[in-house]
Image 1 (cartoon, rainbow, N blue to C red):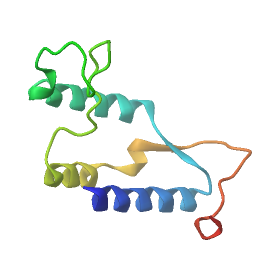
Image 2 (image 1 turned 90 degrees about the vertical axis):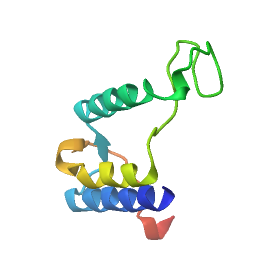
Image 3 (image 1 turned 135 degrees about the vertical axis):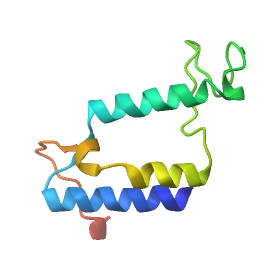
Image 4 (image 1 turned 45 degrees about the vertical axis):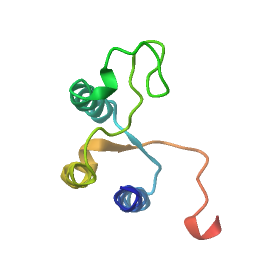
Length: 101
């Protein structure tokens, strides 16, 4: 899964470089992701009725980042459209270039 996450991050950095501005996830994209995540997690053992655990906050929110397989994750990020998921943000401070880290 890490290789798919890393590849996605590199794509996001390229999108940011092309736009000349930092990027952030849109509210719509985050809401859509959390909705899909909650529906998927509701069908797993993670929501087994345990009041609190390392994977669950006191309010019942499950903190698992991905309930599916690596292949499902790969398809999910491959199907996402960066233009719909990210927006440029105005910033007075710029992050250092990768080569300068």
